[in-house]
Length: 310
Image (cartoon, rainbow, N blue to C red):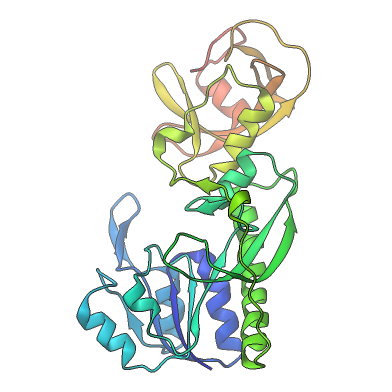
């Protein structure tokens, strides 16, 4: 099986690693151009590019995937199959027509639920207990291709965007190997998605992370877990942004204004009033400072019961 792999972030790395370990013929890896990263905006390669170079696999980084020169180069490879996972751009029909068989995508939800750019955060935002991965055949319509395989994954109460992404990335990597084996055997059976059940997710923006203290403690906790590591959830204290990394929703009666600090405790953190229930802040990060325990922040910034966040 001659494969061209499309992927960019860490989420795609386990799938590429599994293809390498299972000795599939990877003709080339297509990934996004190197980008500036970090405080000093140093140009760095994608995690997928690093793995490909480590294994001496040809790397292609087109700025425009529909550009004629790139299409001709890909066509010259005579691939049987494209494997696509979190590449970062929609593949045009001119590219999808190139492989001898088809293009398979790993999507981080149980399609047709949570199509689009942010299925993992949305599963957490909606307080789901189950999600999963889908191997589907790519079509021009967003995440609407026929399904080959799916696998369910449980969402633990402590999962956040990082831990759930890691679970799904490894599940998707294992499922892709199954998909390739069933394809090689000639027994691949695809099933159409039920369009009536389709839901869509939007690309996240920084402002999606602002905390509305008039929501319930459970809803705010879900928001914070969902937006780790980006764009992250945040509130304000003394006019400066305060990122919240780890919290615990407590279902008990509260009082005072929404966002008001009710208690500061060494063992229970900073307890804050919400519309329904109390939210205990356990780990947070003041603007331009390091991440720290909530009690450490309260001590350093003289935060007291009665202060108001937001």
